[in-house]
Image 1 (cartoon, one colour):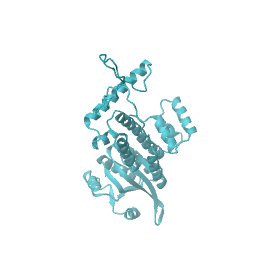
Image 2: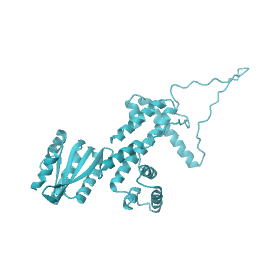
Image 3: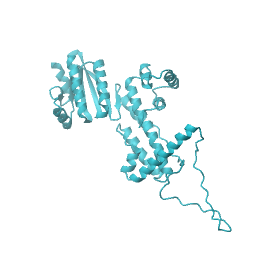
Image 4: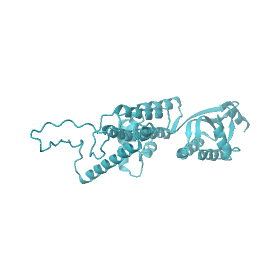
Amino acid sequence: MGQLDDQTILDVARKIGFLNDDQIHECVELRKESDDASLPDILTQGGLITPDQLRALLVAARFEQTHDEDLALAAFAVANGFISKVEVERCLKLQEADYAMGDSFPRLQEILLNGNHINAQQMQMILRARAQIEATRVQLLATGAEIPTKPPTRRHRTPSSMEKPKAPEPAPAPETPAPSLPMPVQPMITRRTITRPQTYVEDFLKKHKDGAILAETLKVAIRRTKLRGKSDVELCIIDLFGSIDDAIVRTWEQYLAEVIERDGPRMILNCEGLTAVAKSAVNSLAVAAKHCHDRDGDLRLYGVSDKFKKAIHDAGHEAILRIYDSERGVVMSYKYM
């Protein structure tokens, strides 16, 4: 998948209620005036949305754009007889179900192959044919030629040896499609919007006032509490949901640094909802803990799985990343700092 399209981001922002039509028009005009400033920069620096809202917006927009690309693949496969409309719509629903749960969703190509709906040879035929059609379309656009919206009608030729030609019988549907068709008919496949992802995003942000969706695989929520007898000491608890893999470590590091700077150096990570942590993410936690130490604070963990504990041990960070069994235990530990 390529870079996120500005229009997709703005469309999704309207759908989930982050921007109204006037604000979207303003963003479009500002984008035209400045080639240097990206749309996300305009949204946040202009105060239209918060950084946390931007993260949620980009996740939803990426799903929307990816889903649109897969809808085009689905339409092509159905039009050329590789798969039925009912079957492909069932596959597309799998994407929505995974995304609505906050999980990474597979691409349609992967679903079709893994589910044996289409074999590898057929998939290669589809991809080659679509590439040929796209190349033809680009050439036509470059020359200014009119792009056909329907394939040319094929007329059956009656043999000249027949004295009285009869009307041709309808040709039977071929068992295997011909990928050389210049422009296959696109069937009406119901276009799905981000209704379910929108509900998921909004529900999470409503449930967690200071929640944020850092990536498709990681959601976070912040709670704050004060020590009994020490009302001036505030602790920041971050609840983690999902996994931290190598692809999002940089985003996670940046978010953690922002929270430490904003909420202070006494941090607690609730890892009960964490399903997996990459080695690079363990190292980033150690760096964050050192940053907290430099500011007379600490970063402590609870609800850590055995696998996560082993990763911390293997990375040699047991001394700096202190682990507790419960939230009460880790909160009480701050009394003795």
